Image (tube, rainbow, N blue to C red; front, side):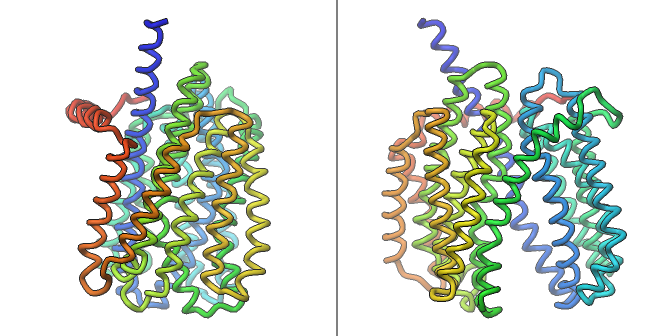
Length: 497
């Protein structure tokens, strides 16, 4: 008994560290969207002017929506099935072909409909840009197929490197071409070049066959459809607050405040975007290998991590006005109270994302859907009842309450289907620390240069409070540091050519 306990504990720690290491890499790579997006937006708004920039935003929003559909349709199914496969190559070939077929079909349809869409939006110049950007859809689809296979195989760092290559390429190409006088087409070429570079980097790490395979596409799609419906429900929920706010009489100025607060509340969503695919891949592999206790441990530690992140809600709530002033200036101070509620809502939604990922890994595909659809319906009814009376702040509170409700409901469902040792002490500590940080931050001075000093101080206080409470043991930090030093001279993982 004693001899077997040691390896089990060691494997638990190894799996947990591999997951956390991959999360840090992928989160860091995905977080590049913030500085890159700000730089590109600043350049385009100044170089193109409001009218041309508006045309580009219309075209890019439509393209990104179509590409997001591919992500929702195939993403989670790829992570799980690749992680469970003893030989991923036949499945990988099927996944690549499905991505290419879908991307080419969408690109062809968009090219045909580009002129009617431009006519509907009363922007004839939009036709050419839509047709050029349609070329990005199959490129993105192929790159996405490789990216998802890497995650399913557990090669998280390579996935992060490809994303870094994408964002750096897009930044360099866009800056060079727009400044060089290519205008909107410079931004279009930047998007195309970024997808191509990401595809080439991914292709160096993993090479699924371009030809047919023995794995039936129908079997893959039967697994993917419930996850697609779940993804659509969550995306609709993510956008209904602003839609209802504007549709029910809010001014453009109020919508601007709300939109600014939503943009600043993206951090939990970016973390969930980086973490959940890696978690799904890890749990699927452990369950395939019948390492049930290790899978339970990783699931509980993942929930402990996201429970601990609730501390940031207190930090953001106490410093909301200072954060808005720092990023958007004094004209957007009305977004401060909205940011506090929306950030907390996004944090609870991240909890739901992790729970739904655990349920998916267990093969319980319908439960995330059964939770997300009522969330969408109930929140829509609440927006209709609350917004006419309370406006923007009412919409933000409904978003928070709906997110908290679905998070709690998902935890209850998880405990009934697959009982875990949930880290309730972590949750309690996080709520208490968040309340304390919020109080301290709210009584400190605000305005002028204070945010530059206040925000770092409160951030340090949050980190120290987590360490003092034992949520991040010093021994674990030392082990991570030792591992990092050992990895610096080694390759970031094995290639799966």
